[in-house]
Amino acid sequence: MAETGKREVDFADRNETDTVKAKRLKNDPNSDQDNHNESVSANPLFGFKTTTVLRDSAREKNMFIHGKLNDQDAVIILEKTPIREDTLLEIFNGSRLKLDMRNDIYSTYQLQPPAHLNEMKTTVVCPATEKHVKKYLRQETYLVQETGEDYRSITLPYIQSQSFSVQWVYNILEKKAEAERIVYEDPDQDVGFVLLPDFKWDQKQLDDLHLIAIVHRRDIKSLRDLTALHLPLLTNICKKGEESILKRYGVAASKLKVYLHYQPSYYHLHIHFNALSYEAPGCGVEHAHLLSDVIQNLQADSQYYHSRSLSFPLRADQGLLSKFKDAGKL
Image (cartoon, rainbow, N blue to C red; front, side):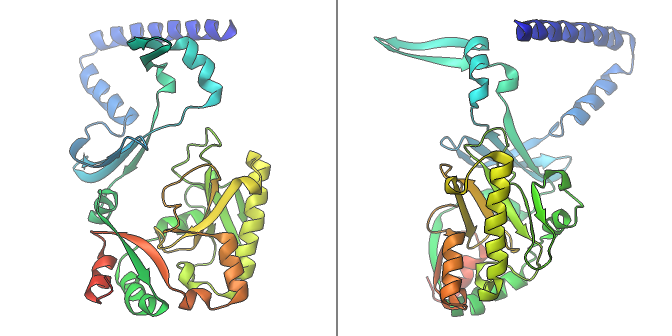
């Protein structure tokens, strides 16, 4: 009953506010311009003009849109957020339902939940470069097998020739951005790291828990750079990352997937911590390497990832794929 009363008060407050606003608009000749300015400041997507839908997925309930925002190229990512258990009572009691079909014991409805429970996570990339647009465009995918020599003669020169900026990573490490999102930090410059939620996780439920450990060291681009000399770093991340997640979220190590991507999405060593039951994008066998396996491989052979052949997927539009084709590797 207390909640119902609060909602009624809130509704009355909104009506009173709307009445005051309506009077102001009626009497103020500059109200149209003020209203426009308020809309722009309250909604950073105001005026966005869609050019094309790059990709959408009914299964993952997301959509990637390319367009113009304030005359700049932009990519907007819309994602339906997961249903949370703590909102079920409000969904059941406060939603509007429209019957679609009824047959014996089965019924289907269109359910419209309360507005605040019908949110979409929205990511804005602006200004977006051609690389961003291509990254999110649906493309045919190929599986590449890269030997150690291929890495040194094809992949590494390609990485070095491209302007893959990781300044945003340095901003996090230097507390110039996202400092309030850091869950844990070990400041040691050799074995230390920061742990923070991945942007894809809205932190409203643990089913899709996803955190990233970003190392302080700036000389490790990817799995290929790791040797036995980096074992203290990797074991420290594993141990303290799992301890921090248990303390903060109550999720035990036995309920986590801890892994690295190869190829990574950006070339500064980082490690993913996922809820075991969550099928995060890129956690398949062709892309992810369990941290526990990486540690054991390096314990057995310090140069394991310098010589080992590694397979990974590449999209048709990625420049690295062209380099492998030019070298006769595909």
